[in-house]
Image 1 (cartoon, rainbow, N blue to C red):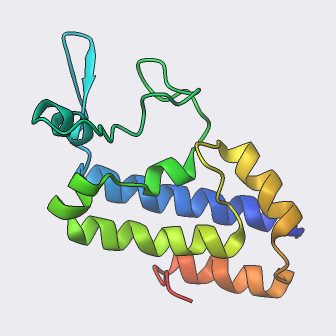
Image 2 (tube, helix red, strand yellow):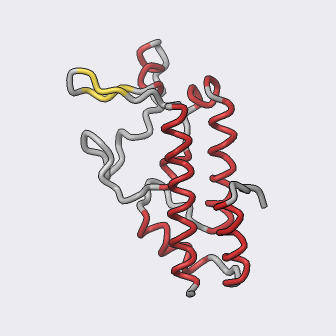
Amino acid sequence: MTKETLLEEIYDLLYEKAEAILKRDNPCEHKMKCGVHSCLGKKDILSGDNNPQCCCEGCPFWDKGCKAEKPLTCKTWLCRISKKIYPETYSDLNKITQLIDLLHFWVYRGDKRQSLNQANSECFYSIKRLKEIKENIKNNILTF
């Protein structure tokens, strides 16, 4: 098994974990109403705050829905409102974020290919260590 293959498998596992957390809790409270996207970050601007936190807007992959291939870093980011309302969700996603940093998957608004390219060039863990990390993730051990 190659380092590249292991990193991709780990990436997919982390993405699945993040996706499951988001589906479980819906911390962004995403909605479409009359064809317009709404979330907690947008509600903030409606209450008078001029600093909207809707993370999807302005993203090159966003067009009435995400068009990126498995954007892991987007799945683990929460706006300050969501962090406050859903602290357990934030804590769970933050464990994944720590692994993203550890494995060099972090690409701002990046998709799977961009993240894997960065990890393949910057992650210096041995194949043995990557296998251990992968097994820990499978067993829901997300701290290292």
